Image (cartoon, rainbow, N blue to C red; front, top):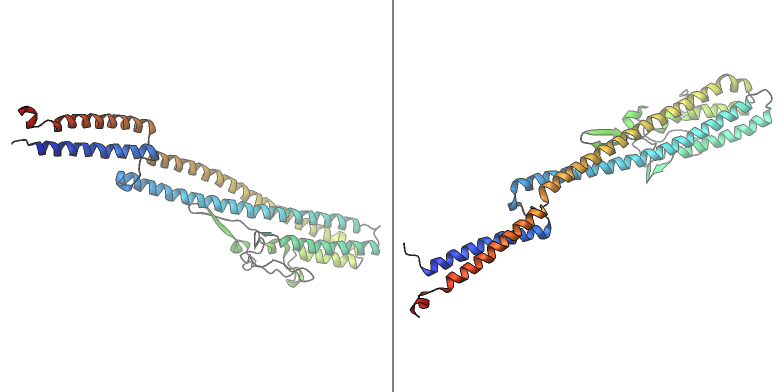
Length: 307
């Protein structure tokens, strides 16, 4: 087959175009720092990168859930600490008022302070995190208690089962956690729920016994009932603390997973800069050599020999 000048020219131009495309891709890789700039560059790598990015997004959401749960539980711990201090103060007052040296006047003064402690306990139970009441069960828009004489719990306790009135956060793939404590579990509903024997009920009974100058009732039952309520508050605080520790462990685990996913994504998407520059230099040299060779061949024609 006769090789014509036009065939040589087309072949040279095709080779130059191929080298130019490779050089342009390598230049884009070097400029962007990415191995994959479009799906066609590496379909399998693109699919893998999309999966890794999806996992990273989910991991970031778990971290946000954990941070929200931490804030909620820190607010709960602060409220429980305040309630603990109120109960301890009530204990001290009852010990003082239960002695035989206390008279009706001093016991009446203690009763007035107990009444203020009751209001303080309810105010503390009405603590909020952001715009949500932390101890109202799932009724986070409703304060658990009204101030004043009405001690009725206003939130949701799911039939006195705190587990069913829980605020739940997903802190890992398929891992959920209840992050709230329900006020009715500790404080009850005072005398609107007769015989519940919880903190508000106990404090109301103490106030009545103080007002009635009944030292025997204070000594015989009120002190032990108050001690039992304090133990209950401390038990809930311990549970809240153990959940906080679990959140810390979950946060550490999510951090490690996030780092691993980021490393895999970098290995999938990011270009090896040193290898990219080697490729660029070799392709650039090949392109320049092809240009020089092509120019020499294309310039030669029949007229050069007829001279």
